[in-house]
Amino acid sequence: MVRSTVCFIALFSVVFGENNGLYELNIIHYNDFHAHFDEVSPTGGVCNPTESPCIGGFARLYTAVMQAMEAEPDSLLLNAGDTFQGTIWYNFLRWNVSQHFMNMLPHDAHVLGNHEFDHDVEGLVPYLERLNSPMLGANVNTTFEPELGAYVKNHVVVTRRGRRIGIIGVLLRQFSAPIGKVIMEDELEAVNREAAILTAQGVDIIILLSHVGYPSDLELARRVSPTVDIIVGGHSHSFLYSGDAPDSTTPVGEYPTVVTRDDGRRIPVVQAYCYTRYLGNIKLYINEQGDIESWEGQPIYLGTSIVQDPRILEELEPWRQEVDVVGKEVLGRSLVTLGRSCYVGECNLGSWACDGFLEQMMERASADAWNDVHVCMMNAGGLRMQINPGEVTTEVLLMAIPFENYVQVYDLKGEYLLEALEFSINVTQTPGSFYSSRMLQIGGMRNVYNASASGGSRVVSATVRCIECDVPRYEPLDVNKTYRVLTQNYIGDGGGGYSMLSENRENVENLGVDYVLLQHHMRKQGTVIQDLDGRIEIVY
Image 1 (tube, rainbow, N blue to C red):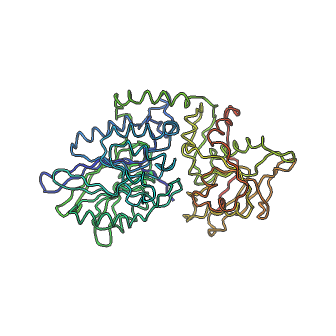
Image 2 (tube, rainbow, N blue to C red; image 1 turned 180 degrees about the vertical axis):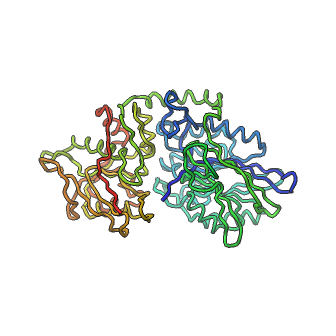
Image 3 (cartoon, helix red, strand yellow; image 1 turned 60 degrees about the vertical axis):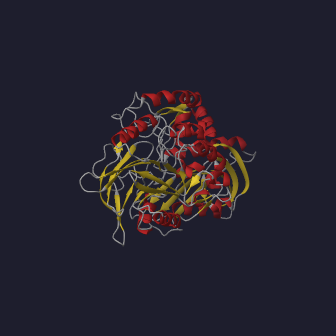
């Protein structure tokens, strides 16, 4: 199974084709900005120009967008969601820095991403209040959140050279961020409802600006109203490219990926990776009936050939100084790469974090035990970036584990612990390989999973380290025993489908924020050497 990533703002330019009477829509797009104001290393980590040239960043993105707009003066600019969260800039500056720099680009519309809700409605409204362009979310029902509803629109219509273009925005229906009293509605129903409204108004070019992910975009393309012409997507961080990519990133599909519907219509679907690494660029040729006849284009790599805008660099500097006060503190040094191949088995980044949490729980141990907690579990989706060998700063740590979850400790019966493990690997597998978007990284356990077995019976063995013993050893998981379990509040509160934890745990304690505990751990540890010790084994 292939993972992917996508990054979006979409720029749409509408002009007459000089020779053939066709309209041209030139689309330049990125999504999943994820607070990447600074340029990053080629591997996506903190930029260190002494080691390798750096790429991306807002100043480079700004240059590329402005160049595209200069080439196509009648452009539309769209942001396909997840502007928030992902670097220390968001951790400490929140919506404020986001609105400041997003307002420097002439967007025609944005669509909400799931991470815009990471700090609930009250963390989003101040951003929307100050944003100088419309925010879309046709399936975001704000009836019971009127303060939010004042700023979220179902669609927007723009006019270029006499042609009206409708833009509908949708966000994936199911996600685990705190959304207050917002009701998330069906994406397909919302798109078709708005498409009918736009068509009745005489709008015959309709763009779906989507934050539901590449696989879901392909399904939407098959089922949406035939009046929808193109889907510009986000959320899944999918890299689409035709031919050999200019960097080492492997495409997961053609650019565009064209879906041919049962009615014969072709709908292009585009995405352009994420984190300001690429800027999408596609031109559509559309006839008088609003049908796409052809297209051309490729994503643009935002490498060193794209010069960072000097005015933007100057504008970033006072914000950077504020971030650096906290972010540049050196916590320790890693002698090894702490990798994040955490969806396919054991990853040493997850092992290091879990072991760090468990070590700090030793201070809470009772007189008859050497630790207060048996087991640590972390969802792989919360481990976002590898930590490279060298100094580890707070900034580096927060790029790896950015979501500021609380660490929770609670009692949980073994049967529900086993259920969580089975759920973590109960996804459809390709024979001979393993991948799970629900994967749990662990500490205090050693588990064997059979990827070829039927879902619900893939845990071959699960052993738990005893904490009441003189000599620690691993014992078979007892479904009738109550264990002390440590997780982040995301899965502990039932996020990601882990309701077996939230509904059955007892004696819950919320401890500190995850990255703060890991700061303490790394300061104490000093030097990190974390191997793959076989705590998770995948067999076939």
